[in-house]
Amino acid sequence: MVRITRVYTRTGDKGETALVGGRRVPKDSPRIEAYGTIDELNSIVGLARAFNEESRNAGPRRFLDETLAKIQDELFDLGSELATPEDAEYPSMYRLGAAEVKRLEAVMDRCQKELAPLKSFVLPGGGKVGSFLHQCRTVCRRAERDLLRLSRIERVSEWAIQYVNRLSDLFFVLARWSAKQAGERETLWQRGLQEVKRKK
Image (cartoon, rainbow, N blue to C red; front, side):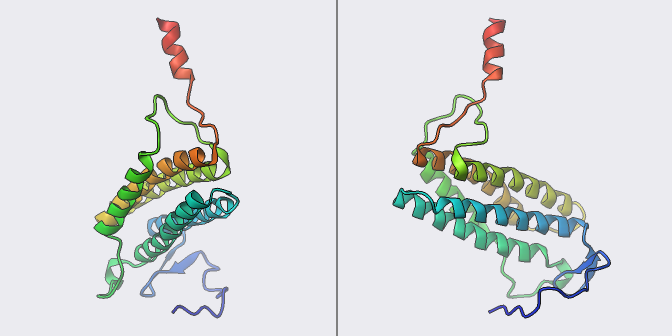
């Protein structure tokens, strides 16, 4: 059990922070950017969960909350993994792996069965929960870019990158799925379709 007795330490006042193992690095270094974006994403998932509590549809509400709660735990695990540089890794260190990636795919497959095939791009929206899940998707894509940038200068687990890639896809599916469960209208992108019609 982690015990936190003090929030402020004054050790970061000069723009540096400590990684696992004690090494201090600038707060805008690629590794800090990477797990900082994961932390930002986790916060938005929390917002989606908070608004999901307003849903009157008990079954879907419970399923979405359990799914997002698991994702929050995994994002925290991923943040811890990213905060641990290669020279500070230890034998019992927890890492995301194939099982977590496959679970995301299984949730996507389950939700996709209830959705109509898309005939155009979906615009972000679909009610409060759907909108936050779309924001999760875009921040997750940024996290993926941050991980890729970090991987060019330091070793990053291939499973971590795969997990974040699948997770952004899952947020897209969950945004559509939650909108359908809530009876919210899904807005499709129109301009491109109108351009095609005019050209004909």
